Image 1 (cartoon, helix red, strand yellow):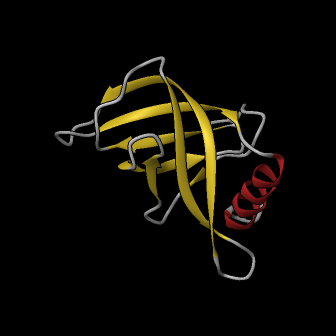
Image 2: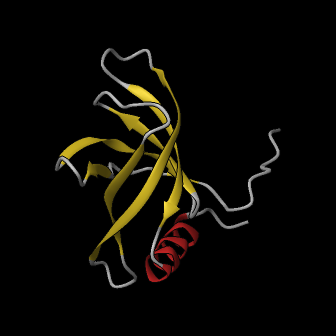
Length: 115
């Protein structure tokens, strides 16, 4: 059994949640997993390691509507997957408005399986 040692709960994202690079307007992949402090991106576009990105992705609010989450993120690492043209990419959030952090936290907690 693997023991979770991260400070913030991490959600394996079951749905297709697209991620957009706000600087280019390009879809760069989809969420693999996420916490309020970072995310794993399944990237479909080339990324620059150790670079800073301004990213956007949608989540659902408590009424079933869609909210856009905007984050400043630092690409910590990436590695190729077995699927050609795709990579795993680990990001740490460096800028996230307090209200959006709270919305993200609530969304994650609502999606996590009951303990």
